[in-house]
Image (cartoon, rainbow, N blue to C red):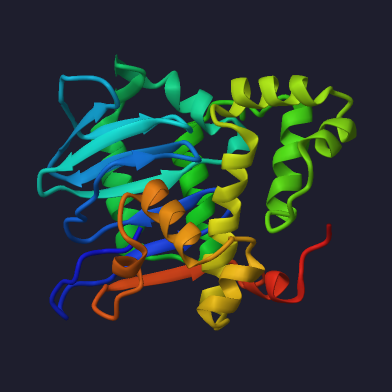
Length: 277
C-alpha cells in the first residue's frame, strides 16, 4: 500500500515487498476503500482507529486491529487512522496463529488482538528503526508468532503455494499441480480453499502482483513488467491492485506519494532473468 502525500518533514511510509510477508508501515492517513482480498492480512492502527463492515453486513465495527482472511470482501472506513498492515504467509499458517490471539469476531472478521498496545508499540518501533529487509522480516515473524509454534499448512498445500510463488506468471493447470501432490483436481481445489481461504487461481494473482512490483522496483518499464508478471493487460493489473490493497494503482505510483520500498536484494534480479518453472 502506498501512502498519502505528506510534508517533506514527514518520513516516508515503509513497504517491505515480499511474496511471503508483505509489510506496510504508514506515516499518515491512507484513504482506503472496499477490499476483495487474495491474501490474509493483519491490520493494526498505529494511531486512531478504523471501522469495518463485511460484505452484506449492516453493522460497522470500530477497532484498532483486525485480521482479514483471504477471500474476504470488506469495506473499511479509515477515520483518520495511521496503520500498519502485514499480508501473511499462507504456507506458514500465519492466519491460524493470529486467529487464536483475536478477542472478537464480527461477520467472519476477527478483531481486537491480545496485547494490542504492545503490538502497536513494537510496530511503531519497527517503523522508526526502518531496518533492512531481512531484519524487518525477522521482527515481523516474532510479532506474529509470539513464541507460538509455526502452524504451517498441509504439506501438499505448502508445496502448491511455493509452486505458485515460483511460477506465478505461468498458467500451470490446476490438474498438473494436483498431480504433483497426489490429489485429484477437485480435491486440490477443495483443500486449497479450506486451507488458504481463497481459490487457487485468485491467490496466484497475489503473487503476480508482487512480481510486478519487484520488476518495477528493478527498473523494468511498466508495460513490460505487466506482461512479464503474467497480467493480461494494464486494466487487469489495476483491478487486482485496487481490489487487494484498496487504493488505485495510479495513486500508488503517483510522484506525490511519499513511500520507500524495500525488497530482498536478490528478489527482483531473479525475476528479471526468469524464475525456474
